[in-house]
Length: 142
Image 1 (cartoon, helix red, strand yellow):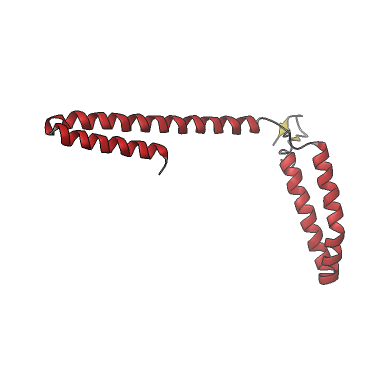
Image 2: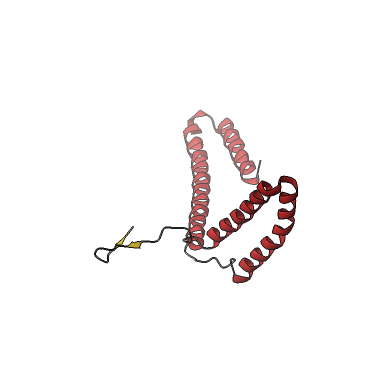
């Protein structure tokens, strides 16, 4: 139970105590007062969640509009390629030693696959089909 729940529980206890002291004739006013406090609490929580959600949407939109991403620098891509080639040596040896030619082929399919995924991540339009030029009228076709 957090501090806000504890505060609300205290408010409810105070409202119930006041009802016992004041009697049934003030019950409606006391309940209305307590419900107004609960309503304010709910409104505050909804407003905070709405602001947080709106801020998250703005962050997603801001990140989506950059191309390439600021973190995807040339050095990072170059480093990924170097690490990939360095790791290809032991993977090739293991794949070739254990599975002979089929093992070597599987190892290189994995290496090429990882590099293709990295390339697609850093260059989103890399593997999209490019429009072809029609031979008849010079118009572009999809």
